[in-house]
Length: 143
Picture 1 (tube, helix red, strand yellow):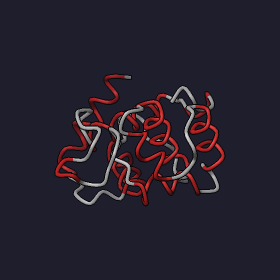
Picture 2 (cartoon, helix red, strand yellow):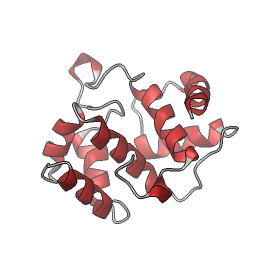
Picture 3 (tube, rainbow, N blue to C red):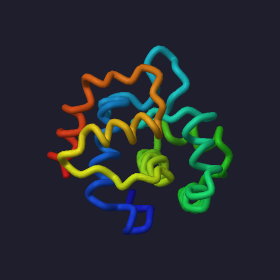
């Protein structure tokens, strides 16, 4: 997230990005299990989150700048492929995928609000809500 403006690097932003990384991959898998289409610790799909961040009016300028700064073309397939091996890129896109949400990012006691924002931005196919409170708390402990 250091590639983004300082205003996007709040404690709340860091905690929610970490919580989502724990939820999506446990920071153990950069490629979706069972040969699925998602890449990076935040499990972005090429036609979903990657394309969304690259084209959303609130995020596309930031995304294009970051992608080019890291030496990639701003094509969804290129970014998606790079995310599997570039955690800077993946974490910046994770933060940007939350940036378009209208709600204020949740604080340490607002796990339910964090869940709602995660579900809205990621639209997980297998959400596992029972794991969220622990992942949210663990992320805040890290911060």
